[in-house]
Length: 89
Picture 1 (cartoon, rainbow, N blue to C red):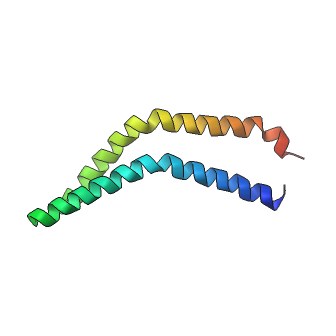
Picture 2 (picture 1 turned 90 degrees about the vertical axis):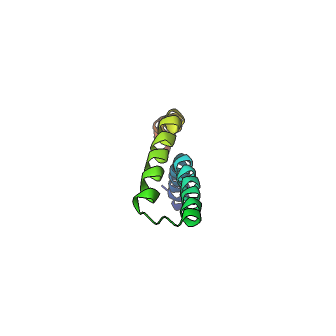
Picture 3 (picture 1 turned 180 degrees about the horizontal axis):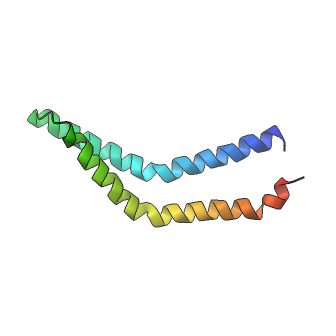
């Protein structure tokens, strides 16, 4: 294994991880901003008001994005296993 191969392999894994996490992170960021604006407008500073909507919305986003995430993960794993003989020299 060459250093270029290892770096490329790690890069692909990191890109997949970020791609898979992006929907939940985007939903969490959006809900967090909306809740922060509502808190600033109403001056309600309850800590559970920030966490509960984010957790619920991220969970809902995970439910909707789960088939897409599984397709990405299965394709990556299938590609990894099929190219495994090429990696071994």
